[in-house]
Image 1 (cartoon, rainbow, N blue to C red):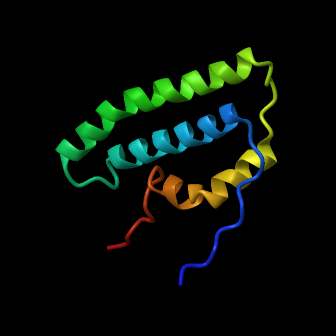
Image 2: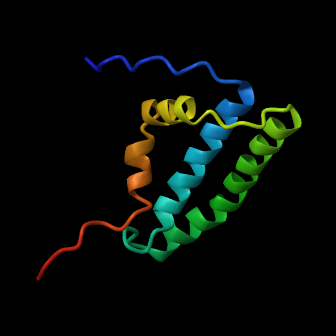
Length: 101
């Protein structure tokens, strides 16, 4: 049985879209990462998808700004990212540990 995840913190719709779009960008950049990808075609497809994900991220931030949501609530959004597996997902963006020969 899969353990139940804690509930997401209360977010505005724009904050939720911001988090979702940010994680989508992170996922695509992780697929492009030359230190982790193994095929150019997969990296190419991820790079193509990155464009629309970046636009969605920009749009979410634009909506937040237009609605007067000028502050990013770091602790709340970081908690949401952790619940949505953001730590593991963002690891693909970094370099893997070096292997000594």
